[in-house]
Image (cartoon, rainbow, N blue to C red; front, side, top):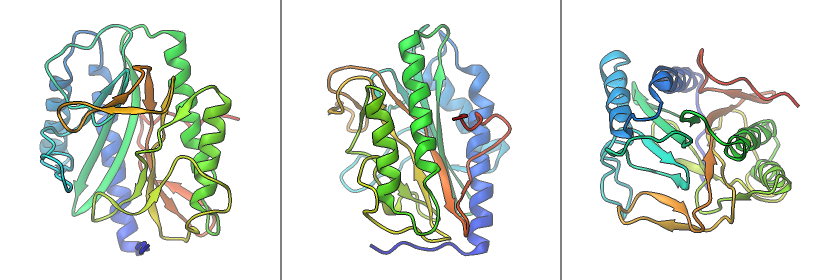
Length: 264
C-alpha cells in the first residue's frame, strides 16, 4: 500500500479545503427543517460552493469504476440510509435524522466532512444513536499519532459502538484524501489494536464511522448509489478529515459551527 505523505504546501491547501467543506455545513444548518426537500438543500449547497466559495462540488458526476455518475453535489442520507443518499423532491419529515456529506475541491485539493442533523423534534433513541456515533468518531480520532496503527482506530470505534448496543458498518470506510477524492489508506472502523498500517506524520485521511441501531448488514437500492440498513433500522454517520502531525493529530474540517469535541 502506497500512502502519500503530504508536504507543508499540500497541508496548507488541505486546511483551506477542509474549512470550506465545514463552512458549507454551517451555512446549510438553518435550512434543515420539516417540509424542505433534500433537492432544495442540494441546490443551496451547490450554489454556495460554486458562487460564494469558488469551489467545485466533488460528488457531482463522480463515477468510480462500475458506477453511474453521481447526479448531485452532496449526499443526504436519511433515517435507515447508511450513506450516498441522493437528494430528491421528497420533503423532510418531523423526526427524521439526516447525514449531510460535503466534499469540495479548492485549488485541486479535497475537503471532506459530514454531520448528522435533526429534523424538527427527534426521538430520544435517534438522538442517542447520533450522539454515540459522534463519540465513536472522536474515539477513533484520539488514537491518531505517529506510530499508532489503523487497527487502533478501528478497535476504538468498534469497541465503543458495540458496547453501546450498536453495530459497525464494515463495507464502507474512511480513506486517504488529497488531490484525489479517495486515496490509500482505507481506514476501517473496526479492527484489532496494533494491526494494520503504522501512521506517519503527513498522512491525511478521513474517519467516518457508520453506526447502525440494528444489525450491520446492508442493502443497495435500485439507483446504484443509495445504501440502506438491511433490517431498516436507523443509521448515523459523522466524518472529519484528519492530519497526522509530529505529536498527534489535527482536525482539518473545522469551522465556526463545528460541534465541540465531546467531553469524557
